[in-house]
Length: 281
Image (tube, rainbow, N blue to C red; front, side, top):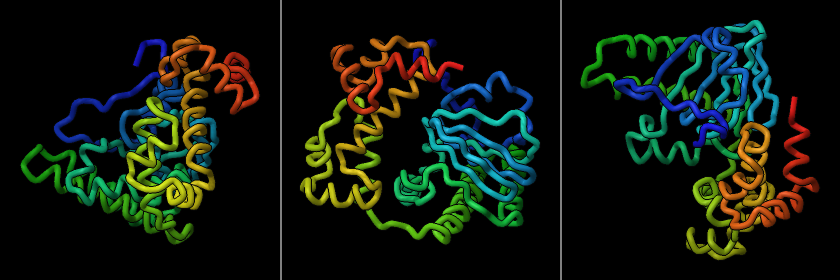
């Protein structure tokens, strides 16, 4: 993105796109991590001791020892660089994880990445998490060879499945394939199209069915969900970038600044400038 927009961290060049770090490195670089930023990859945070408060898309998330928190690619986050805690953070790209069609499907249907459960902390066995992360670290420290990517992928998948099992025990899954297809489509196209009809045609279903399934998954109608996703992105850019309101409107696909202003005010009851001013610290 532009230099004045939200800072984006890309995955650094590695033989395979997965990495494990001590969470201590976050505290060592407070100027980077305590300020709003996006990551162009997934992040799994596991606390072994203490507790921390992270801010993700305007929500404060408290994570305790022996819990996992997953931050999805593209979310805006601010890390806790002050509290007393320790643990690990696993970074990985969707392209690394999506070795097979089943893996790609997991990223689209897993409850831990469900819009309802996104950023819920998940209690996990310290033995399970500690052992698997240690094995993953050990594998990544070995010289790169033909087997490394697949072995590392297996450990990462086991960690995600362990978190998925713990979450679905606490929050029974909602079987809603159509709703998740809609969610994924909105993530891809909301800047280009905010009309329900577009998604009805894209998914090849009738509007009544789409409305029923999306409401079951998110508690919102398709149109309300599309608008809420657009407003979230607008708020991210207003709060965390120095792009002008006009530039943000163009970034979100509005042809005229006045149309963006009207849209934002309709859904928030305040103007973009008023929202921006309210977030200044």
